[in-house]
Amino acid sequence: MVPGDRPLGKVYLIGAGPGDPGLITVKGLQRLREADVVIYDYLAPTELLGAVKTGAEIVYVGKQGGSPRVGLHITQDQINRLLIEKARAGLTVARLKGGDPFIFGRGGEEALVLAEAGVPFEVIPGVTSAIAVPAYAGIPLTHRDWASTVTFVTGVTGHEDDGDFARINWQQLAVTGNTLVILMGLGRLRHIIDALLGAGRPPQTQAAVIQWGTTARQRSVMAPLSAIADEVERAGLTPPAVIVIGEVVGLRRELNWHEGKPLFGKKILITRAKDQAAEFIELLAHYGAEPVEFPTIEIKPPSDWAPVDEAIAQLSTFDWLLFTSVNGVEFFMKRLIAKGGDLRKLKGVKIGAIGPKTAEAVHQFGLVPDLVPKYFQAEAILEGLHTEALEGKRILLPRAKEAREILPQELAKRGADVNVVPVYETIIPTARKEAVKAMLQKHEIAVVTFTSSSTVKNFMALFEGEPVAKWLEGVKIACIGPITADTARELGLHVDIQPVDFTVAALAKAIAEGFGK
Image (tube, rainbow, N blue to C red):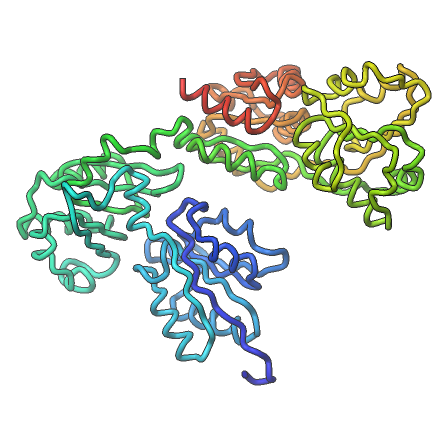
């Protein structure tokens, strides 16, 4: 116990992996989700912060290239004190570290400090960059024909005449003939090469340097040991980078799987709402892309629930309940439950869902839609209802405040009594506008994606008065379906990619196929 009889919290030293957020362990992700405080490093994938629970404190303590980020002056001693302070406050602390905390990650130092302070801790190993980065570059560190041992070395501190560098037995490393992996050594690459060559390592030994390994920003250079430094300088590689030396490097010519993905290294702008973008981002990353989140639409509850509540009170009087989006399902059903209702209120009411994703959202509430049209647009619902006698039928349409009017208008023409209720509203967020503008101006974006007419309109509204057409020269525009594509064209944009099926999975595949060709 500590002063005030406050129970101690606990610190989890979590290895976040080398850059690809999918490489964190299941246990590491679970503890991250449970944490009250997350203290993370420069090399920890920031995408993982999306898993942190609402209200948790997030603290950045990273040091780039051994130095604190500009504006931050966090020393290791300060980090140690912060861990102890948070744990003594009774909090669960996730210390999120790039790679593995016990492999050149100062995890051992932090664990010792916690032990000496009597703070409970647990170490959750991570995938170290020492093995993952070469693997993503197509370099197996061992191979029975080429290398039976591998040595890990760090060259992060000291010069050639002191520090870690002086403690390394370069003579022994030079004569082993097996694989050598050097972390944090790019800044003294020439010293390392001189030491190895001077100790007898053959100059023709295969070598590679991999920057930002396991991510879409990965860049690799491969050359004989005697020439690798010149090649690295020519390519302009900078830290973070992993150096691999040994004959196994030559296998990269046949095994370079990551950098061969169809969208590898391409920045793709995601304009979808942030809380709906995860699946699309994951799909694009699977094809090797670097997704850039730029939500041009934000979903929020309606400013007035009265029309929805009135419809819920009369729910049993409706013949049809038509959902045109996942948001419509979730906001309506949650409001129904919040008002004390349950599924019994829907007895006798037929349900229509505009497509498989909307139907899936309906299924989540234990319901089976009576109508799921083949095409995912309002016209398809009308087509699906063409055999229904709608004269005098009451139809409830919970949807966005601003939406296309074709569905209620056409239903009304057929004699239906249509009650349209706004269950959510959309606003235009501006948080990342300047950052994305800079990327567009520098022509860093390869594809801009739109998943609804609203995302197109809001994108153009965000940059109203700006030379958007000039920024988008050479940039591919990808739209999820014909309605979205028509909106893009009406606003002066060219449309290059449009899938046959109107889903994000089909859109991601169409983008990949377009570049693959």
